[in-house]
Length: 376
Image 1 (spheres, helix red, strand yellow):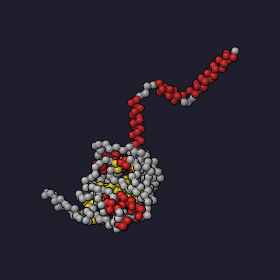
Image 2: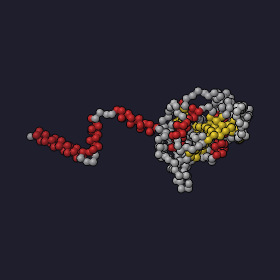
Image 3: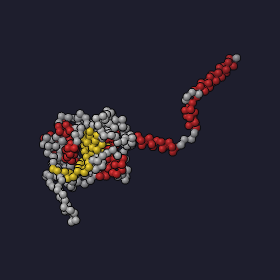
Image 4: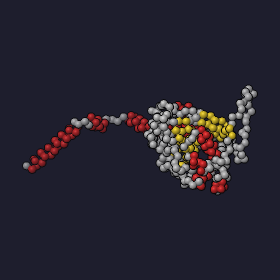
C-alpha cells in the first residue's frame, strides 16, 4: 500500500512539472525559447558565424568606425553647442596594420571633412580644445601616409579642432628633430592660437583613442607604451616619440635645444628642461598610451649623434641660452595640401644658417619671381 501511494505521488509531481513547463512556453517568450531549442539541433552555419565574428572585430578596432554618419553642417556660429566633455565617438583600442598600396588620395577620400592644410572642426558642435600636430620630417613620405590614415580619424573621434603641420628639413645636412619642432611651434602659432601642440614622430601610430590629444597641467609624454619597448616605459625620464606642450609650458622651458644634430639625446634634454622649469612629466596609462612603430632602418643623414652624452651633461648650464630664443631658420615654401600643411625650411648646419645651394634653372624656364622666403 505504501509503495502504491509513493508511485502516485511521483506521478503527480511529474504531471505538475509538465504543467509548469507548458505554462512557461505559453508566455511571451514562447517563440524565443522554441527558437533556442531548434538552434541546438540545427547544424551551425560555420561560414556565417565566421563572417559575423570578423565583422564585429573590424568594427570594434576600425579607426573610421563612428565617423560615417558625420556630415557637413552649417557654418559655426554663436548658437553652435559645445561638444560633450567626453566625446561619444571614442571607441578605445584601434587595430593598426600597414597595407601595401595605400595612397594619399585614398586617405583624402576617407576624410571628406578635412579641409586644405589638414584642418578640421567638428561639424555638429564647437570643439572644447584646439590642438596642433607638429611632425618633424624628411624623406619619410611612406610613413607619413600611414600616420595620416590613422591620425585624422583618431583626432576626429575626440571631437578636436586641429591642424597638422609637417615641418620638412630642406637640404641633405644632418637631421635635427628638435630644431624642426621649434620651427613647428613658431609657424603653427603664427596661424592659430592653439591650446596645445603635439610633437609627433612620423613613424608612431596611436593604438587607443582614449589617449587624448589635449594638454594637461604639466607637459605630457603620450607615447608611454611603444611596441618596440614591449609596451613599457623604457626609463622614468623618457620623453620621446609623442609629447604635448601648451604654449605656456613651451615658454617656461625655453622650447627645445637647437644643437642636437643626428639621432639621440634631444628627448632626454627636453625631459631635463621640464624638470628645470619646475614642471613634471604627465603620462596616460600604459593601457591607453600604446603606439605601434613602423619598422625601418636608421635614416640616411640621421646617424647617431656622438656628442649627445657630453651635451646632456651640460643641459643645466645651456637650456636658457639654447632654445626658442635662439632658433634661426628660413622658410623655403609653405604648401597647404589636402591633408596637411607642408612647411619646408632651411635650418642651416652646426656652423649657422647658410643659404641653400640652388640648382641652375633650365634654359627654357622663365625668369623666376622674387624670392618669397621668409627668414625667422
